[in-house]
Length: 291
Ligand code: HXC
Image (cartoon, rainbow, N blue to C red; front, side, top):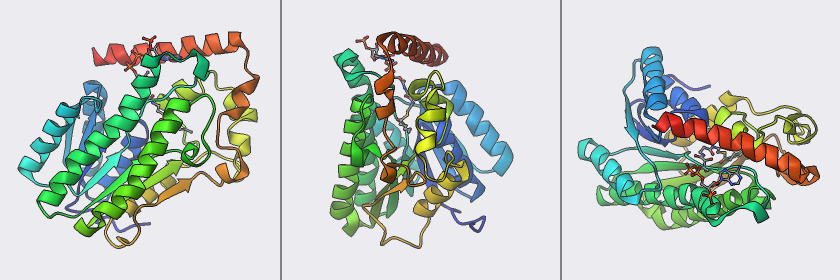
């Protein structure tokens, strides 16, 4: 779809770039010539992903262990990159989410998600954006959102609230920072199965048949290349007039009323208890990886 040197000389930071959607976008940017900065909480997956990409595309990939909830760490990290040379692109991809009846959430559970998605995404955007403004350098930001920013969704309320806030940030900063040559857009993917998301949003895999997938008019989940192409287009030069927009990439799922977790209404308390155990198992495995 694109010339192989489309992103040559672009330096792009991807939060949560070691796994899932972040890793997929990183691969595609590297294939098109970008130099990458990937950060996340687990060193082992970052290093593994970086080595894979370097092997395949012979481009530069820098890794950093970072929890975007820690605002000072975020700012120090961004400063260390700009000390060398400014970034050209930022993908706010890191997120946290799990399905749960809202009545069963603890305040710490709410905070875990809101601190990653709402606060962490702001810290990163602010740290990068203010340096672009100071150095008179143009840049492109892409926020990975969800279609619940338009509809809300039961059972993922902290995520829906936080991502809606980032959608508001996308619109607000497009207007405030347009004069500095900064464009900022969002992508709202429908179902693009990745391990991190599916372990927490579809832990028993029951959603796939009569739930989420059957509600996509195209009759299938997203193909990763479709997300990669859209993200690459938004990182490239050539369409800077496109800013402040969140683009749904969901096969028209949410327009049919199908993009939420409403179908989970049929679960019993016992089903929820089993799901909680499965999600906690996935969380604990990730924690063990973080050491
Ligand atoms: C109820 C839960 C829970 C569950 C965790 N908690 N899982 N509560 N049901 N299933 C509670 C814990 O009990 C604890 O509260 C609090 O949340 C914090 O848990 P920790 O495990 O200590 O938090 P932490 O290690 O900071 O992990 C953050 C996390 C975790 C968000 C809970 O899931 C994570 O690291 N996720 C990152 C990856 C991820 O989520 N990927 C999916 C993104 S998908 P108490 O009060 O008990 O101490 C996405 C949208 C996709 O964003 C859209 C697809 C359509």
